Length: 224
Image 1 (cartoon, helix red, strand yellow):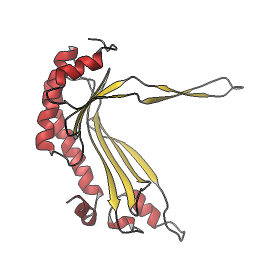
Image 2 (cartoon, helix red, strand yellow):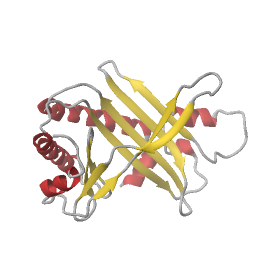
Image 3 (cartoon, helix red, strand yellow):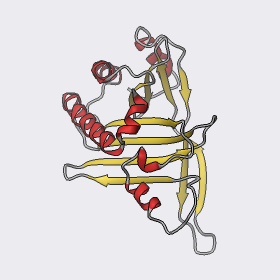
């Protein structure tokens, strides 16, 4: 089945028992950089990306985002827990498989994104994060406080699994120090639905292990 202007409405009808909330249409921004002549140089353009529909539960905490080539099963705070998120992932993927007549999945990822708010200001980063960036900052021959940082790392595993890790400071709306932690464990490999169901547990375990390795006991107390 191809994506048409009618697809978002058809998806809402198909999934409205589990996602009865008002759906949202998302239009991601796509940036393009093209090489040019020596005289003109490269050109940069920004254009709307492919549309996606975000189906929402009645309380807005459980989401299903679907586009022409991507689908994501999402949980927002307060999190429902993996024991509930995984069955929802399996059911939604089975239904999307039938809806679109999908033959194979191009890849699977388990992603954790969180905004971490720390009330104690200023913050000693090493009290909350085990990260090479924190060590590097602390060892700099400069006296002063950190006012902002953004670190992103991409790692390639021996089993063709990738890890994209982002730790950054973000603007706070109150008197707290706010940080973004984004952990994405990805396997770009064609597979059928049963293989994807089996793989997602492995990716989730890796994501959990990375999370536990990154935060200190003091940071862990912020999530309790």
